[in-house]
Image 1 (cartoon, one colour):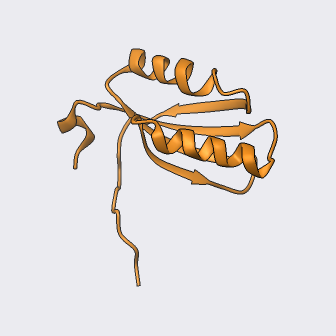
Image 2 (cartoon, helix red, strand yellow; image 1 turned 45 degrees about the vertical axis):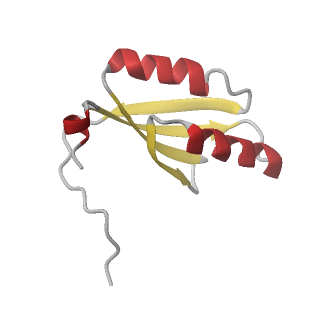
Length: 97
């Protein structure tokens, strides 16, 4: 489904670095991300970030609300970085065999 057709014209890729990686705190973060309606995909990853989020919202103002209510309020989020998608070049939700 095209996010624009659903009124979600802004896609933002967000990397999140947690402050502490205790199992209970990581589970709390996962639970919060599953509950966030703005997040369409969430991946726990290796490397510099702990999580990568794909956020679909109406506009920059809606993204600002998401950041203020879901990331700034989470005491275990050390820092995050966001990248606004300019063009979706390829999207194939499938697994190759």
